[in-house]
Amino acid sequence: MRKRTAFLLPVIILAFTAPLLALDPVAPRDERAYGFLKVDTPLPLSDQCEISAVAPASGTTQNFKPGQRIKVPVGDYLLKVTLQDRVWKNNVSVRATELTAVILPGFGNLKVTSPKKTDRVEVYSPKGQLVTSFPASQVKTLPAGRYQVKVIMGDLETPKIQVAIITNTTREVTASEKKGRKIVSASPSAKP
Image (tube, rainbow, N blue to C red):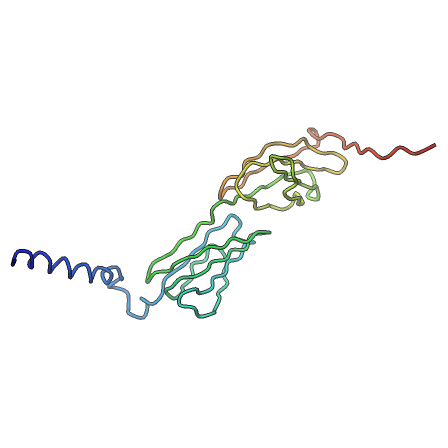
């Protein structure tokens, strides 16, 4: 019986005190109420982040730019990241004195170099449906996947090419007038 007690007593003490060991014993007591959050996105200059407390519910929100390391009270939050024309939401838990790093999954960039910045870029799904259209001067954030890209340069257009968008990378496409073909539009024939 004494052997069991001698064995169980340290096990019970460790079981109840293990969460206390997780706190940083060197950090001052007032800093133990805070953690850190950092969010990485494909285009940090144009994206915007917002967190709102879920538990404990305080009703406050905090806005910040991706790449910034912010200090927040310990708790559970709803993280909302606004990309160019998309919104990504996820729940995040912030622990005492720890850095919670979030890398936005599933999005990459498409950059098209064209003779004129005013040329239009059209992005199609593999089934041929138009996903988005934007000027060649922009870098566009898209969900990861395969797309067909066509560039319209005045009265010329390039053939559609296959482009794979990969998470957290920028895919670059170069369009030239040499590879463009003349756009032929059919109009209804005039009645004599």
